Image (tube, rainbow, N blue to C red; front, side, top):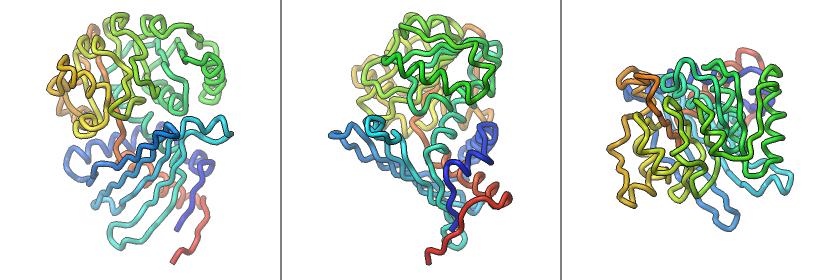
Length: 330
């Protein structure tokens, strides 16, 4: 079995790679080539934490994977990472366990890549102003993916704890120092959203983080933070103003996305208002943005085969590059 650390994966596998590999996997999933059972989520309320178990398989590619990821928001107070995980990659022909990969970076990377793909199809071609609401663990790769697909000239950051937004501004330099001069730390989420053409939401909020009334016509929103039924980042006004709503998986958002479940339970919105899945968008089965006036929303709760796509690709690149540590576990 090949062991791959985060640093080793970072050295060979990029956001550009992930966008390409995930988009290919989206099309394969739409064609029925990927097995993706519903993930298991263990909620740990005493720690305000979650543990997720996510299997998937693509027999035609000869790979299957199980990811175990934990999300412990209080960890930074102990000097530990919020998100930690591993991916075990196996061979579908022999059952041999091929690799164990650090999953924290790959999780952030693949989640960002999916949002980048959604942005490519749903944001205005001319979109150049982005607001990042929530500057936590997932935000960097979310922004990085948007920067890959659109020419951004202004980056507005908002976090309830302002110091966290300032620290995140420093991380943006790691993507490319050129973006440092484009950053503004905002005191109000609504003000940031009102000035944006692309909005990134990656929080664990249980109440909406901005008012849908302030959205400009033509805005695209990526929502990746509220992944449990009691969490809600966007309000009902936002949903009512959206011309198109696309999700990573209908089954997943019906079970897990509080952004939809809460208003649906109130009777003010229903799941029939979702236009389709991101795989259908990538495969050309549903339409993307059709005018500069549309407000669009992409909601992601995460799919295991996204992890399979990036883990399999990173594993193959690592083998070719001779990177990683081989251990015998038999």
